[in-house]
Length: 294
Length: 118
Image 1: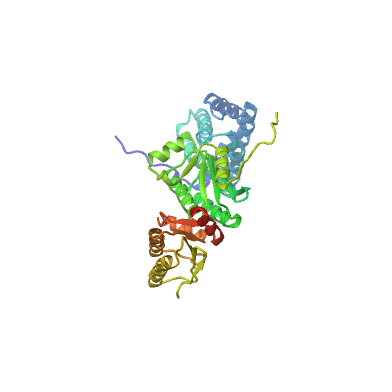
Image 2: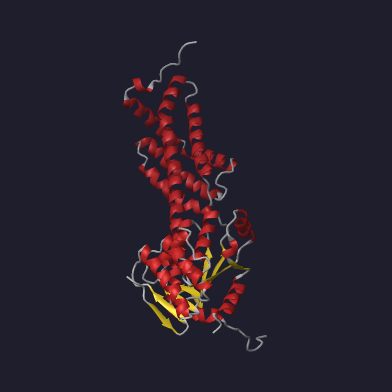
């Protein structure tokens, strides 16, 4: 068996590759509608982009197609990158997944390659050269689109994380010397630290004696967050305030027990209402209903 | 510097004025234990507002003040722990297990009144 023939690209003059690409672009321009239709058909058949309607898919497909051809023509991915970012920005909120985006770009590559096979089926040597010119460009395009999508998604995630972090946890005074701290969302170490800090300052500023920490809105607690919670309770006690923790869900309670957090220091009450009632009792308030409201 | 210990009715009020060395802490502990007996105090308030750092030795000393005073019939309340100090203490695992804590002097005295049933 003879050795694989050398790829021809290196031996060829660069303007030949350029000429091939020009021919390719002309071909893709000519068959634009047909190939685009075929692409859309295959996208729908493969159940990609299910979050979008057919019309939307056609509209986006047209833009992507034109951008694709443009990249083949100019060799510059900048415009495509920009478009891909823009597209990602629009489709990420609609729940389009990475595999879908990668999937449609690969489909387009296949559709176009198939069309090239058809065009050059009688001239195998020519087909080989055309593919040599086409494939690197096509792969580069696929990479660009996928990378832009992922970048955009990561940017979105980063922005959201920042937004969550900035949603400062309010320390509210409900009654004289009584604070309430509703925690909503994931309790990670950084947030827990920030929260402890705010709470202790709040205790000093409001001369609080009782603090109700409500964690109804905390879906899960890991061992670090649990330890932070215990530390917050302890630190508050050192500042002379009693802490009542309310709204421990069954899952959170189970986690706390499983990971063996020292619960002896935590004063836990079922829900926020009971927590506030307990706090009132500790402060010596007696709330009575003046009149039946019904 | 010696920690001034003031007598206020049945209570002793010790307000720490500056960072104390270990020797000064021990001296302070001995002073207060002696004075609890001398003045037949029912309660002790230790004000640590000025302390930026409370290390393990200080915690141990304050705890032993609380225990010693307890043995001599007085309740102890430690007041004025700063937020940063409180965070640092719990992170280092230092805690005044048996001792009472309160926000400031006023709160501390109110707590003593409660504890001694006054």
